[in-house]
Image 1 (cartoon, rainbow, N blue to C red):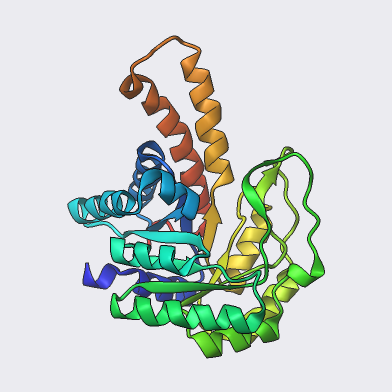
Image 2 (image 1 turned 135 degrees about the horizontal axis):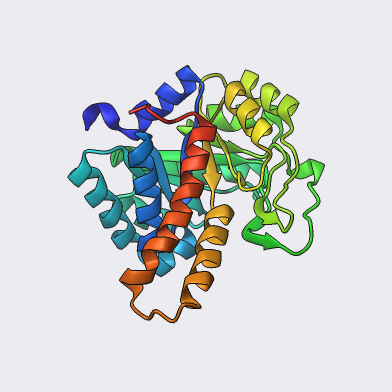
Amino acid sequence: MSNKNLRNYFKKAEKEGWAIGHFNISNLETLKAIFQAAKNLKSPVIIGTSESESGFLGLKQAAALVKSLREENNFPIFLNLDHGKNFLYIKKAVDAGYDMVHFDGSSLPLKKNIKIAKKVVAYAKDKKVLVEGEVGVISGSSTILKKALKIRERDLTNPEEAEVFLKETKVNVLAVNVGTFHGMKASGKNPCIDLERLKEIKKKIGDTPLVLHGGSGTPKQDIKKAVKIGISDIHINTELRVAFTGSLRKVLKGGEIVPYKYMPEVIEKVQKVVEGKIKLFGSSNKI
């Protein structure tokens, strides 16, 4: 697996112009769906758990599940702590065996964001764990939004601040806000990406991989253009939750009470969503 570590896949994606799909989970069924999709399409994949999702599933349990799939199948599947805001919790994720941790200090003043990010980088480096930083506040939550979020100019990533943050912290990858948000409108159509801002950010930060959060519902053409500009990691969560919950509600109407009999149909629905994203991101056959 030495040639299949996450750092190398980020370099490969950055160099070749495609993006790794980052898909969030809070249960085994969603993990199985993501892994099967990635395996079918021979694509590296990142599994994400937020503080809430990992709190439900368990940090050590999530790490053990992903590690078992990676080792048993000799497959590049990796685990990231998504939007970690508490240093002690991030530390626990590193110790539990996560491959990457995301420190989200975007709501803090830049100096404080830098200060804590440096602390995270220093701790993670000894364990050979990658660190994702964030500049620009990505609002919302991974659900269907009853009211459309208004993207505020001050929340978008400032290219100069991104450059300063990266130079000071030396994080491995950087999450930026270029007009997306967590969650999805009921219509399924979210705002377009600010591609010009993304270009300016990319000019400032060079070959450091960029991360796009809030990928659910974002126009496909925008995704393709963003990947060409330099997005190397795209987060999807809401669309998986919609597929999972919608399918589960449907199968439960049939009256079956045995989970291993009705869950395969749910898993299949989620798997199809993941396969579509992998193809869109261009990561098929990149192993």
